[in-house]
Image (cartoon, rainbow, N blue to C red; front, side):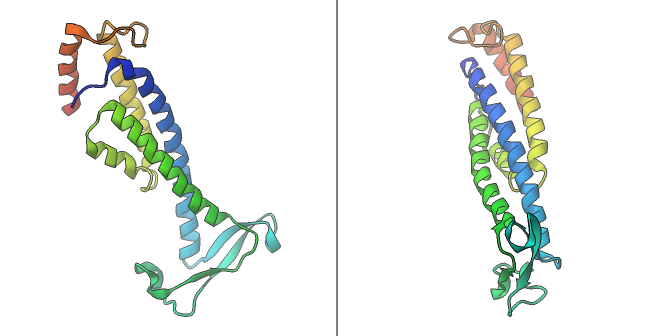
Length: 190
């Protein structure tokens, strides 16, 4: 794989910060979504509402429709089982669901941006994308990606004379940079 260009280092730093923020927001929203699903689809059968007859924040019961069996919610499509909420007011559970969906789109964009600037292989992008749908994975991926990218940038800047104080000043790496690229590429694939 080709190495990232020295001139793109400031863009990589910006993309990394954007990825870190998007990763944390998406991870928190995913945890809230999982909690909401557990509350709604387990025998607890409640949803969180704001306002309405129950007060500021309250749990409203969720009723299983007439055709529901105990196993209906575990079968894809639910076998015609409909869940009906008994609450009024603002459905916070629904807001969590919608918010996570939109933040996941932003997270995918952040993943694509850091992936393309770092010139990683496609399976790495798939792993980054899984961070938004596998609970807690985004937090581990955020820490790992941040560490790897910062180490890579520091190593390249230390070994490349055309990068002065951490910013790109020249047009390219020259002969000294080509030996560094081979070493770095061998380390990345190892």
